[in-house]
Length: 188
Image (cartoon, rainbow, N blue to C red; front, side):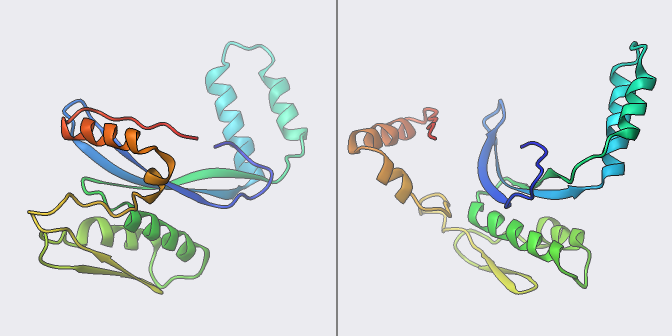
């Protein structure tokens, strides 16, 4: 994501990070575009030039150019991200979307309070026993986990995968997963 002259629509995506010990972290990110203050942008550029190009003799020329240049309206991308040891992909995407909407309006609480509530105060429900409800202004989210003797928790649809692959490829993927091999699917 790069600086933009127009405000772009937010978009989100989910992913899985695996460390060298095969411990997984499940993530969801939402990229939003915020208006950059032209003076703040000038200061960032000045600091960057000063710290990375100390050896240049024409630093004063750069400073004068920055001061004289009229900067256009620019939007900078920012990422809102949630990482967890549990694959609540759909919940995380919906939660980030609601947090973004709350950030655009007036809220009785600071935005950080909603984040702290989710990551520190909401309990992880035991497998197959309890459903935990999380509320945000205008939204109610449910968190639950399947019983121990059922398939692992996945809160997204396999339909796009099955619609995109042939039966042979699907069987090959399940064979690899059954043998605990790594599988990487790349698509446009």
